[in-house]
Amino acid sequence: DIQMTQSPSLLSASVGDRVTLSCKASQSIYSSLAWYQQKLGEAPKLLIYSANSLQTGIPSRFSGSGYGTDFTLTISSLQPEDVATYFCHQYYSWPLTFGSGTKLEIK
Amino acid sequence: EVQLVESGGGLVQPGRSLKLSCAASGFTFSNYGMAWVCQAPTKGLEWVASISTGGGNTYYRDSVKGRFTISRDNAKNTLYLQMDSLRSEDTATYYCARRKGGGAGFDYWGQGVMVTVSS
Image (cartoon, rainbow over all chains, first blue to last red; front, side):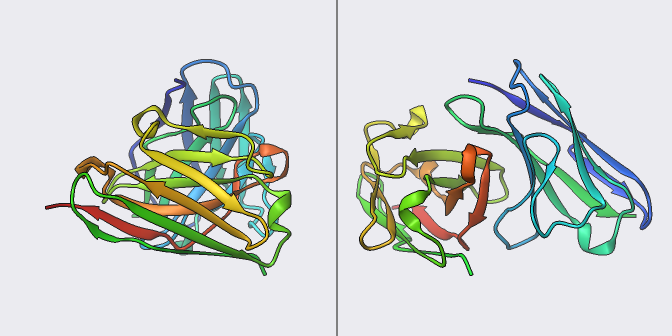
């Protein structure tokens, strides 16, 4: 199974900050990576797919990068509504796996 | 508008069965692969099972193989998860999710249904 490791597990930042979340795969997944945002009590929402493609309707302050085993989700200017837990997900091979999440808080 | 609405959750004793349903609307259901993803209380996301557009191909995580069965009825626009021999560790919120075109993740999710396995 491909293990997905996210860091940090908890991130506290100020409104307007540039925020970077990391996700590492235990083996190459090429660009088969998605990022999801999950707010408290809600279902996950797809933000990024194919490592760097922005899902329709998602604000442009969100961006993704990376290839192979190392991936990054960046929020260019943190907004209060971005408080959530963020999960990465590999769909390169079965079983599909998710990272354990990064909880993002406002300082 | 794409909608996925799960039902069928509840409290069940260990060893018993439960069948979840997911009613889809707002898109051509038969054109999309579908999946179930679960989330134990205060935990992360865990993929459970996936099914191809026609239902001919199914995939499961190891811990549910032989106990859970994913299926679909394209005429009824409905996805199912038959859960047998339930264990306490199956306790979670179960989400129905649509596989994005090209298989690039899950682009729509239901609101989730809670399954509690306890005596």
